[in-house]
Amino acid sequence: MKPSDNLKSTSNITTSIFKLTRKQLNILKDKSKEDDGNNINTINYSSFEMLAGHIWRCACKARKLPDDQDTKLLIATDARSRLQPPLPPHFFGNAVFRTTPIAVAGDLQSKPTWYATSFVHDALVRMDDDYFRSVLDYLELHHPCLSELITGPPSICCPNLRINSWARLPIHDADFGWGRPIFMGPGAIPFDGMSFLLPSATNDGSLSLIISLKSEDMKSFSTLLFSIPRLNDVLNVLKGSKIFSKIDLRSWCHQIRSKARPSGEHNFFDPGVLKQALSKALVPFYPMASRFKLNDENGRVEIDCNAEGVLFVVAESSSVVDDFGDFAPTPNFITIIPTVDYSLGISSYPILVLQTNVGRGPRLGHVLALNVVECHLVHVVYSEHPKITHVADGVSSLHFVNTWSDIARGDLKHINLPFLDRTLLHARNPPQPTFPHIEFQPSPQMKLASDLLQSTN
Image (tube, rainbow, N blue to C red; front, top):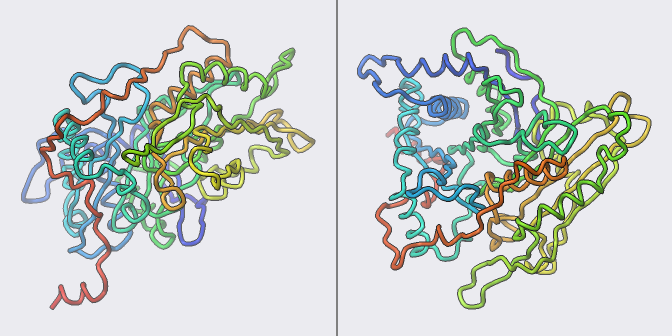
């Protein structure tokens, strides 16, 4: 497979999209049986574990990390089914935790792929009910102000990496009446070290990797990623996108869909239909129409269910789909995000911002409608608004948007009401953390040249 010629660069950060076929994933999984001459792996690792280990290892090589450099991999983990008892179906809120294996770069680079995978596997196995309850207790006891735990660029950038897997999320189910989305992914990844794994829109078993690295590292990474025998498929160009908020990430959500207008359907891509369906969807999902407030007693940010509503923006575009290229997620997409005034205090911040762009004008050609739906769940903003917390994770965000799309399409048979009781994830009384929780400790930093010189003497 050849590296993509469609790399998008902003400053010294490059964001790229790579597609891995089902065959490629199976070949990679077979590498778990490699013999390093000293040890033979006996564990049957999952496809995700093998791919995560491979990506981590390739990033270390592409970045040319020193052999004695520590590196952390941050993996988002959904606790819904891992808790005992599991959270109720359609729990609405935040239930995504993170696990953070740490390894020495030299070992990751010199040993077989399954060595890196073993760290991923062990970290995920540890994420059980006891561990999640310990996390909640640890946060309550040591970090009552969650703004102290913001995991922005310092915790993700070189020599570290973050992987968010959306492979099992229903990210292509938001059919507003003009068909399923043809692509979904993050709208902008403005810093080094963030990556996403996305499922195929056609359910062919493939996965797409979206990753941002320093520009000088990306070319090497793309070569290393596919340095597996018999991987000769050419990267598919992806068009259209829809993005949903994920914990610890400032991102935007947009869907782009091109489809001919059915004859006789006067409300095709009608913003009025979307708005009416939105008003109905917000009834069971009423926290989305709320505002934030500060608790005077403990200083925490809370949701004030005051029915202030959401921000819904209708815009016109004379663009065609081809104007957006391959939809690689770069900060260029920020230009189509509606502006929100954050100068009046958190009580004025809309929790949900949505935008629909309707195509008009002579440039449309065969594209009779271009729709962009923006869903920005206001959450932690690393510098400007450090006290804002997440309203919902990616699973809950998708639940809301898919419900909205079902209503817009007139399909009320598959509506699942949200479970809104968040006390299920409260800490125990008194808090009893039983693990050290290194995931909340500062991430390893790149060693300085003086440190490297000293380590060689």
